[in-house]
Each structure stands twice: as structure tokens, then as C-alpha cells.
Amino acid sequence: MRMFIVELKRILSSRRTLIILGIGLIMSTLMGILPITYETINYTDANGEVISLQGKKAIEYKKSIRSKYDGEVTGEKLKSALTAYQKVIKENGNITEDNEKFPLTVYTESISPIKPLLSKMPEVFADPQTGVGSELKDIPIEKSDDFYNKAKSHLEDVISLEYDGNKKIIDTASEMYEKVEMPFSLYGGYSRDAFDYITLNILILLVLCVSIAAPTFAEGYQNGSDCILRCTKFGRIPFVVYKILALFFIIILYYLVCMLIQIGILNYNFGLECLNTSIQMLFSAVGLVSLNLGQLQVAVVLGGLLSILCTVALTLFISAKARTSLTAILISVVTALLPTIVYAVVGTSWLVYILPSSGIGMQNSLLYQLVDINFLPMGNAGVWTPYMIIGGAVVELIVFLMLSVYSYCRHRVG
Image 1 (cartoon, rainbow, N blue to C red):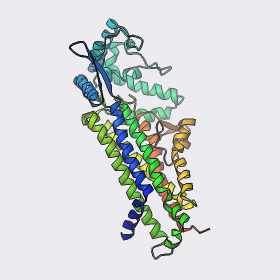
Image 2: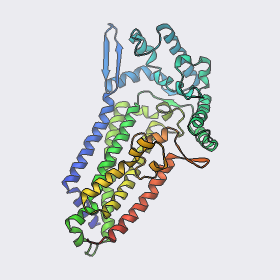
Image 3: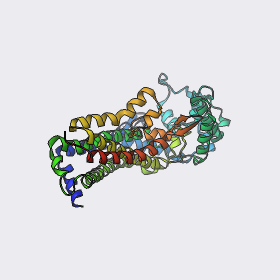
Image 4: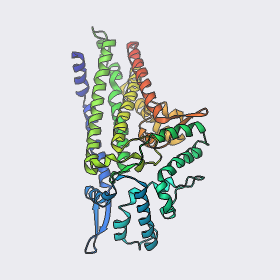
């Protein structure tokens, strides 16, 4: 235990480490505030004056005009909302950027309240041949109460288009979708941008955590202190184990504090009741997991932590092999960002998801693997990408930790 405390003090006494920790705390605060500032709405008051709201005031106003539609998304609600929408469009024309004549009052009072409720109908009623979404004005009102049956058929259409009609993937996805709780729940207010900033913050924390971990062994090689320490009574295996435990303790605590800061700011401003919204009402209507937004936050945060620990384990292995701290940092940061880079070039690929940090990034992140339909073809079947991310991270975490210990113990001064 004494060695563990000593190692904690050593890591935290580094000015570089303290600067990195400070950057993470500041960035987490900013990542919580920025999505709030993007929330805006305009409305006309009793005197005919246009009022612009931003931030928390805009969120509160949106929630106030949409609150009567909170709760289960039933066929009756959808039918009523679609009827109201099409009536307004018929009387005032289409809602487009070019249509400056569309009354702001009508939009605020009649369209904005039902907008989240109707947001998934264009997707569900998309053309089965092309996947192009329908316009709300073209969806037959009498079909709106068949929303959930249509969603199930749309799921099959999407997979047929994206995976060349792979029967096993269709069956797997359909079986998963049957377990999704229906009708969906909607508590308007939470922003999709907020989740994008959560994934962005996890990516930033990944780079920072890797930067903290990279010099763990290489620094000792570089300044010569490792030659002395490995010759002591608790050198080699006990020494390396305590170094790893202390590092993991700091990184886990640091990560959780940073995420609690960001998510705490977001949830305070958007409201905890919004977390009861089904993920299908904020992301894809054919998302395969039965989670609400609160549960999705927990899954993304814990998945991000696992990916970071796995990447840190790889970083320790690199550090045990590198000769200098700078070399270890550069190689580790590039390796950590590889899944994001590869995904941007080749898209969904096995190469992306076998890397330790595969669950961290933007479109390749665990968030979008959970809320969209993502399978990796394997013969006639397919593997759901979140299984690859989580399963791969667990295996690689163990493997790279063992390799790190082995490489450090086998290190010879050159």
C-alpha cells in the first residue's frame, strides 16, 4: 500500500500531469456549456414583437410549449399531430428557408410543439426502394397510427439496402428490435448535439489520459532512474504492478469526475425528465436497443472508460518498449486516434473495431454504434459492432496489461 501511495504522489507531483488534469476539467466544463448556448428559439409576444431566446431560457420555453405531448408516443398522438401539421401547411405553405411569408407565430404555436413528436415519421415512412425519407405533408394521415408496424418493416428495408438483403442480419436485427419497448417515450427538450459533445469530450479525455500514461516507463529509461528502482527489493514485478494500479486509479477517477461535470451541466439545464425519452425519438427510429437517454448516457460513459483503459494498457506496452517519453507519447496518441482516422477513410471495417480505442471518436463511437444499425459482415452472418467494441476492449485490456508487465520486466538497459 505504501508503494501505491508513493507512486500516486509521484504521478501527481509532475507539472505536466497537473496541466493535463487541469485541461481536462476546463474542457469538460466547456463541453457541458457549449450545447446549451446553441439552443435558440424565436416567438412573437402579445405586442407583436419578435422575442429571441437563447440557452436555458430557450430550453425552458421549448419544454413549456411541448409539455402537453410528453409521455408515450401513441398512434393517436401521431395522427392528431400529423393532421394539425398538414392543416397548417395547407393554409400557410411549406416550411422552407425560402418561404419568408410563413408566419412566425403560426410556426411557434402550431409547428414547434409537435415537431419532436413527428420527427421520426419521415424516416419510418421512407421509400423502401431508395431509403429516401418522406415529407410530412405527403404521409397519409390514416396510416400514421400504424407507425410501429411500419417501423419494423422499415428496419428490414434499411438492412436490405445496406447489407444486400443479408437474411441472417435481418433476422438478428428484427429479433433485437422486437425487444425494444413500444410505444416510445418522448419528453421534449434534450438536444442531439449534447450527445455529440459527450463523445467529443471522451475523445479529448482519451488523448489526455494517453499523454499522462505514455511516460510511465519510458521516462525512467530516459533519465536513468529505472536502473536503480528495478534493483530494489520491490523492483520489477511488484514495482510495475503498483505503477499500473496507481495510474489506473488516477485515470478512472479523473475520467469519472470530468464526465460527471459535463453531464451534470447538461442534465441540469435540459432537465432530468428529458432523460426518460426513448433513444429512438432522438436518433434513429429503428435503433436496436431498448434504452432511454439516461441509460444511454451511462452506457456511453462506461463504454468510453473501458476503451480508455484498454488504450492506456496499449500505451503502457508502448512505453515499456520506447526509449524516450516523447516517442512514447507520439506513438500512443497516433495509435489512439487510428480508429477515427481509419473510419473517415474506409467507413465501417473490421480494422476499425479491432483497435483498442474503437469505441471512441465521432461516427465510429460507441454512441452511434448503439443508436444506429451497424453490423460487420462475417460470411453469411454479421456481428453487431457494439459487441466487437466491448468484447474486444475487455480481451485487449488483459492482453496489453500482461504484455506491459512482461516487456518491462524483460527490458535491458542499452
